[in-house]
Length: 128
Image (cartoon, rainbow, N blue to C red; front, side):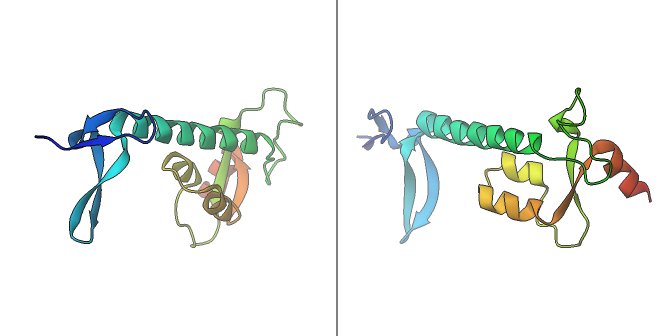
């Protein structure tokens, strides 16, 4: 008989194969407490919330090179705002940190290492 587990989110009993592996603890194979479907839903919601926060944050920024911002340009685009690591202490690309689920604190720490530039100023910075 296949072992069943009750999902903490949907509260349905499902076979253990419906749960993601979470590694080995104390020599025993461990599975998550949320079924695959619920776990994916929770992760998606977390990622979407982080992405929404990041977009709203980028709307408040201005280019340190030319001053391009939402206040100075009626056709402002958050996609034009980029983060330039000017030192060699880069741990990750800021946008990748958002997508891969890094904490807001870790993302902000990485942003603080950067210059905020529009795409044009960023390209010019790399060609000099």
